[in-house]
Amino acid sequence: MDPITIVVWDNIGNTLLGVRPWSSWSPEVAEWLLAEDPAGAAHAPSFAELFAGRAVELRWFVNDLAAPGIFGSLRDDFPGAARALEGPHQLAAEIAGADFLVLHKETLPAEALAGATKLRLIQHLGQDHRGVPLEAARAMGIPVAATPLVNYIAVAEHVWAFVLNHFKRLPALREHMRRREYDARWNAFPGLLLARDRTLGLLGFGEIARPIARIAQAFDMRCLYWDLQRWPEFERRYGVEYADWEDLFRRSDVLSVQLALNDNTEGIVGAREIGWLKPDALFVNTARGKLVDQAALTAALADGRLGGAALDVFAEEPLPPDDPLHALHERPDGAVTLTPHLAWQSPWTWIRDSLELWQNVQRVLAGEEAHHLL
Image 1 (cartoon, rainbow, N blue to C red):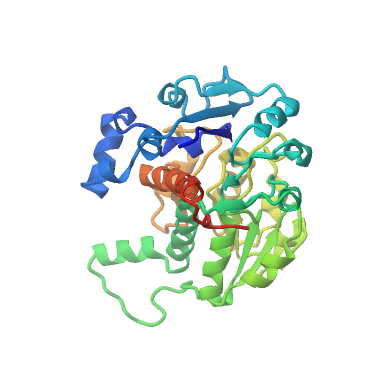
Image 2 (tube, rainbow, N blue to C red):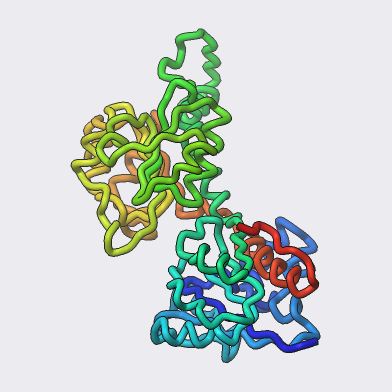
């Protein structure tokens, strides 16, 4: 078999995390994986096992090689593969000699494909592929695939767990049953809500927000979104309506934050935006804590100016033991729900994400059509 060259541009590491050697998982993570799947080791093949018998040169580019990244030890699992990316000119030169290009959450200039005469597939991890120069690739006849992130689907499910927990007042009902009161009168718990009577607002309409919107369709729930760009195709597919910034906050009964954190978005939801929300609205954040003025949010909850909050992320993590959000979470009304940044669920999401994209590469090598082609 001919040798192949694979270029990866991924500053986070999710493309490779799930195909690290089994021995690289910590004992705690391995135990967790095996608890969910006793045959886990066999179902989590490493990169080396996937491409056994084939000469593969892996070139993994990161913007800052000195930065540890989220998975700092991951570089040890792929010795000699990680390289510092000095600029677009370097990437273009590398792609020119590559057979496969794998991207994750990066924006590739169209001109970087100019010399890519050998590319057999551009593979993006995540269906929100806005950083891929799709038209340039199509013009050159290069197939492009975007595999879904199981990690993101898990977060979308967590958002809906928060929403239904709030609408159905499950914490208060649990306490009610714990006290053996069993009051089944139709008006015993005023405030139980129907999703179809409420409006869901999505702040950002990327790959996590879209399955959230799809679930809203199942509930016949009105759904609004704001994003830096309009998505007419997705508006039709998911039955969502674009709203401007202020309108989204004012009209939403549930406001769910689904933005990426960067220099432009840090603190983007401030006291002004929180003040625009309805007094009975639910504020949900499973994205990043630093997107939100947490002090302003806490004050609104404590003063009764907001109906509730469901938070998986915080400005400081772990959330300090003396943070006032804890006291709000412990109130018996259940208006505030906190979880410790685990909406992504388990390491199996990492493994499934990585495996799907590398199995796509294997399909192409076997002469088959890649899955999730655009």
